[in-house]
Amino acid sequence: YGDHRDLHLSLRRQRQMCIRDSVQTLDLIEAVGDAPAFCRSNAIKYLSRYDKKGFPSRDILKAIHYCVLLYHFTEKSRDSISEPYETF
Image (tube, rainbow, N blue to C red):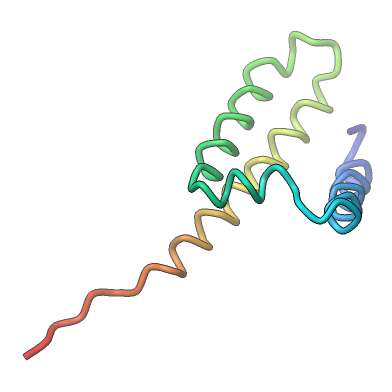
């Protein structure tokens, strides 16, 4: 992860692996309801170590990646919850 192009390539590789392998670990984590917590935890991990491992920009981009995934799963779960309605 050197810059935004590297992040784009990483996401494309991840999507290609998903197509080739047909099941992603994150899909399994989502199936058991833990995707938001998993993404939040990984974002925290990469942000907390970004200046300690020698590749700060790489860890920041990884944190951004997990924040985007967290946003996706949060919106997805929000869309699946229907608003309660009153019955008369």
